Image (cartoon, rainbow over all chains, first blue to last red; front, side, top):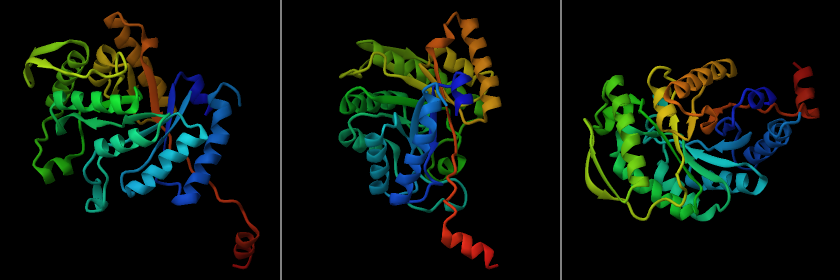
Length: 44
Length: 244
């Protein structure tokens, strides 16, 4: 994730089709955001 | 770097809405939606949601995130119609819409619905004229355009988009033509590629910007990343795996 940000990519778009359905999908999105946000914000 | 979600079109609207509301509530930056009428390949008869109507509905009930098309196939509609719809969604959303636009590529739906599927060269030529038509309509009180593929005569567009300019995002990675169109017209550019390829293509985009005298920093860049989630190795799965 940090490599994408460092390369100058301004936005990363995550497809949801492989993340399950319903609550499982929402939980997966939460995990992705928790992992990705620090790197996307310049940390991590 | 913004982080956005791309709900698939093969799920019912209720599930798309749930994803968008969850993204809105949990801090994602945007929700994107593809513009097709049917799936490509074996699922071509499966239920499939339409982009403009879906995004219009989301714009009315999801109040914060950016909403955009990933991307509109230019061959499906006259660009003046696209401009009109984009301006309306921008109004509905309070200035959060991004018009993602590409040349069009999915042959099966063109054939199924009787929509002309032009050569690559013509699709790209139409894309460039469409950019001129759309931006003229967004910018000017009246637009007259005498293109090879599209003609407008003293055409109004009112109301205008809330955003000035409404972001036009060109989708596609073709280095000679598509990236040059992006450099000439777009506020944003998107393509699907691995990181190494993205870095290369961003360099090509920067080169086109230099040729055209444009600051490359004025074009934001995005790509898609398919992210897998591994399931926790629970006591149950551990037991099952060791019993084999």
